[in-house]
Amino acid sequence: MDELQQLIDILPIIAPVIVIQLILMLVALVSLIRADDTNGPKWLWAILILFFSLIGPILYFIVGRRQS
Amino acid sequence: MQWMTVFSKELLEDWRSYKWIWVPLVFILLCIMDPLSSYYLPQILEAVGGLPDGTVIEMPETLPEEALMMSLAQLSMIGVMIIAAITMGVIAGERKSGVAELVLVKPIPYLTYITAKWAAKLLLIFSSYLLGMLASWYYVNLLFGEISFLKFMGVFFFYFIWLAFVTTLSVFYNTTVKVPGLVISYTLLTLIVMSVLYKIFAHIMPWFPNSISTHLMRFVMENNIPGELWGAAGITAVLSVILLVLSNYVFKTKEMAD
Image (tube, rainbow over all chains, first blue to last red; front, top):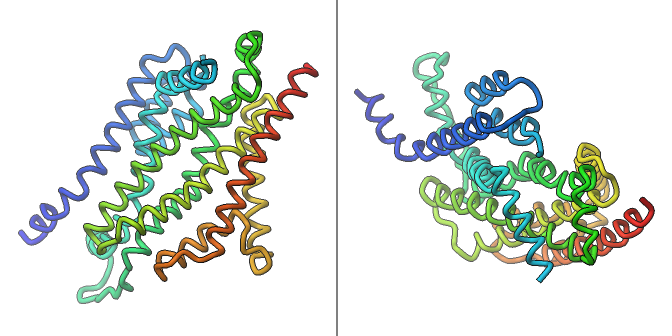
């Protein structure tokens, strides 16, 4: 019970961080799906974006997106 | 006005390449990550476990000022790398793909072209940095203790001069080479050399651009702006202007030569 209470106390403070990470991930995925072509295979980028929060999307936007 | 045309075209392009979404989000995360995780470190250690029962973890109390400076520490590493990455192709990329030739066929002064693009990138970086620092300020006030608005503004303003310098440096290298990968290498290399130089000669160069964060630490702790901070900020701002003028000159001669 004590740990649950602790979690409930922390949640409002941590929630924005999780939400921002989720938005970042979603935007990266939308961009990936809509992109005609990427540097490197698309499925690999999808894995990176999904499983490496923060680093995955950043790397995708900087390296993966092909300037058209 | 031509300047506004180039400026808004650049803003539109940054919007289409999602930069106006991801850069602010990443800056917010960078700025709040360290204050948050250092605040919750005891809980994190407890949750991870592995400590014998009854272990008392003594954490040195973090002052609100120190927590705010943690955000700057993150920005000075990853933030600067992101700035270098999003600006590496601002002119070099267009020259490589030939768009620059298309634009510059029209009688647009080189200085207009360079400063409009520079300003557009600076606006993106300024907005992201503002959002990140506001988020950090909010969390620091909530978790560690109060930091006055004036102090926050001081930190924000002085550190932005450093970030603006990094942006200008990258724009400058954009005019010297056409390959974005080379631009980012030159930018980061210059910054590394500068920080090594500062580490060695700190005692005789109190106004060196890299000293801004050192002086900022003194400013937040002692609550008055040291003269060296004004000096370093002034030097950094002047250097940025010189770099912009140089960019114009280099770009002119390079483009003519091509």
